[in-house]
Length: 289
Image (cartoon, rainbow, N blue to C red; front, side):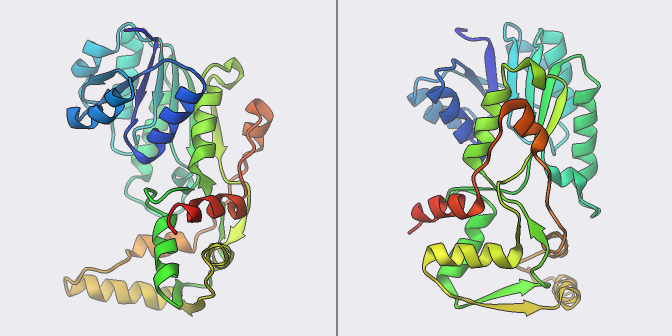
């Protein structure tokens, strides 16, 4: 072991950018991976990897002793957070940065909401010098699971269906800004035992998101607004007929739920200044055209 920092989730979408940011800053770190085959990419870049299971406290206790800091980018929405916290405390890790999500504030009865809330509570109840970062919807490359679907649709179709009014406010955040924030807080003591929203630099309606993305793609699609309630009923009918729908009821409701989150405390405490969507989506579009 040549470092006191261990990173989880390094091969995921956000994790890959955290790896780049740590390397850019000259910070030495090891990566904890579950699948040995995924370690090959990291090893090829000279990054040491340790194989273990985040859901198994004994497995974690075999590898974590000796480390002092943890960056946990792996999702806390699957119930592993209490296990990770316990393993950190018993292994001597004192500093930990956890990536959560602003989705914990949804008014919807989302399946993972209670799991994520419980995860954050286990972190905040611990003895760790933690920082919890809550990104909004993350976008930025063809690997993202959010904006890329919209960009592909705009590329292919002259008509973009909008399930609802499209007036619900959004605040997407670029993945580079998320990675920067994760690495920036790591050694800042004023962020210990704090939680921060990591939202994007521009507040837009969903209609405006489509319009700005379309402009950067050189497209002028027609926005076809469909009733939210009728769309929900249509999905329910498809489900009852065992026909796979391209969208879920929860996704329709999320599209029509305001998702604006103040990041002023992040700006005040560690100078967080995210890209505007206009800037960030322009960078993302260059990667797919």
